[in-house]
Image (cartoon, rainbow, N blue to C red; front, side):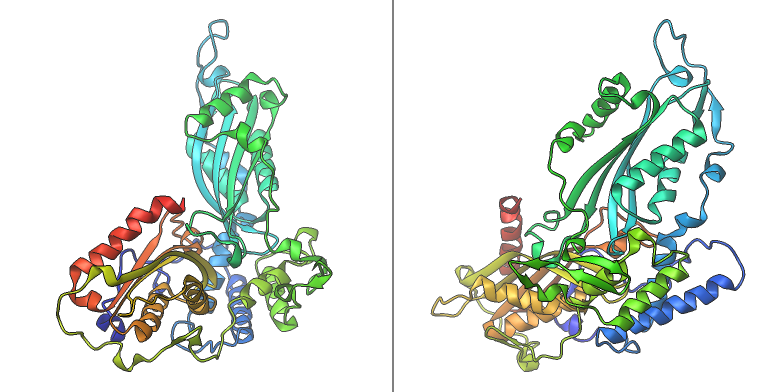
Length: 482
């Protein structure tokens, strides 16, 4: 690893983004048609990389087209799956108790499967979003369905380009039609990444969260006792459907308000105070065409009403992370790596001289899968002897500079540490905590995983107590950022 080893860069949890030999995803169908579609998708991804000003042959990007194509194919496999193939043979007799003495099991008792973790692709911007799904049903005809089938049916419809309410409706309708119960209830909590500038300090804050539900049969009606029981059983897990129903529902996709799509590749931009935001500018037509061809390769119709404008919005998101050829000189930071890896003389360190800027939010784009990763950066350094510090806005600008491009977390951590050390000269320590959307999509689907990386330079290398003091400061201030 060279410089990374010299900088004592350690990963507290590996993100797994550069795993070239990852397991093959589920193969749907056979023959050469899918290979041709895969080749077309990879060519489209290469066109996107070129449009972003990148060299698709450089290390780190060579296998990106293959990874992106595999992720999209796996994430939309629901189009080729049928509910009846899942439910067929999974209905079992269960007589329950006599209706005169109560309801349970196969004669009317409610069954609820909670906390089903899923992900889907937002049909408005083609970015993944995470889902926590809860499914309840009331058996009828003395039959119950295998519990795993409820989550598998939900996954069939999640693995498509979706919006949350339609997802809830489709899961509810499919289950009602396939297992023929007395009723079905579906509740979803969904989280969509916002625009980078709207992320808050804590990585769990700032996400766009919405709640949606759908119900049929005995769950319908304002006074349904079955629906009230369903809501109560969710409350046992800390999920308050009643509170969510009274909350204002925010716009789901943050990119959709920027323009009103007319047809794919074109859109009418919205204005704010009479001015058009530069962020919502027109997208390169060749990149939009490449995304449209990806949709066709996946078996979708780019001209479907719900997908109109989606390729353009996806490209607009990517263009926020376009390669920049500017010198690394920003608000007083000038990177001078000549002395970055010189080991300092061992000596006593005044911990009072340690300055820190914590919980700086960022959003970057994983160069291995073209998916966002986001979180917070913590920076520690030894201030100047005259006690003069560096303004927080300068650090935020520095984080933005290294974050708003195709990146990997390990490299970003090192680059920020080097830039800070080039100014402080005495020592720098950087910790990055991030959630990777590529960890919730693709085959691994590690919904609640997070990744931490640390880079240590200068006096922080030789003074373990100084490093421990900085790390403890992160812990002590975590609750203040909630």
